[in-house]
Structures are given as C-alpha cells and as structure tokens.
Length: 84
Image 1 (spheres, one colour):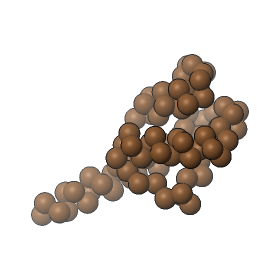
Image 2 (image 1 turned 90 degrees about the horizontal axis):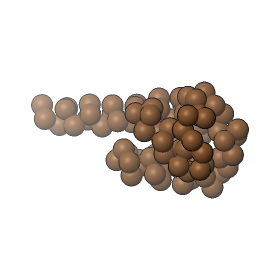
Image 3 (image 1 turned 135 degrees about the vertical axis):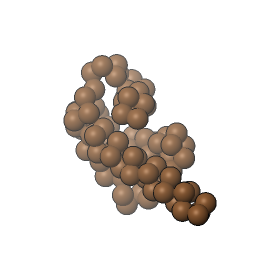
Image 4 (image 1 turned 90 degrees about the vertical axis):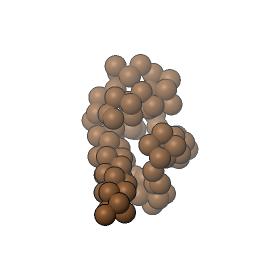
C-alpha cells in the first residue's frame, strides 16, 4: 500500500517516487491545500474509502498509509461482521 501511495503522490507532484521517503514532509514536496484535496479524492477512489475533510491533515506518506490502512481495515471488519 505504501508503494501505491508513493506513486500517487509522485504523480501528483510530478517527481520521481524514489525521491520520496515515507517520512518526507509534504511541505518539502510542495503539497499545498489544493493538492491535499486532490490527493484525498484520489485516495478515496483508489481505495474505495471515505475520508472526512476534517480528518485529512497528514504530514507525510507514513501518516497517509496508517490512515488508509485503518479505513480499509474498518471496511473489512464491517464486511465480515455483516456475514455473521
């Protein structure tokens, strides 16, 4: 998942994903508030999740990965509990 998110951010910022580490601050990548909204929309579509705008305050890829993994995990747990 981290590699996919790195690829998305690299494409959004028009830079090589090799130049991005999981802890590179978004401010160093030039990600502004408009880019953050675009990133949020891309992640929602890519991972089929909803991200409330108030929750989208991440500083780096590691933050995003942890958040997305949590959301995907919630969806899996909800799906499994509906089967019971």
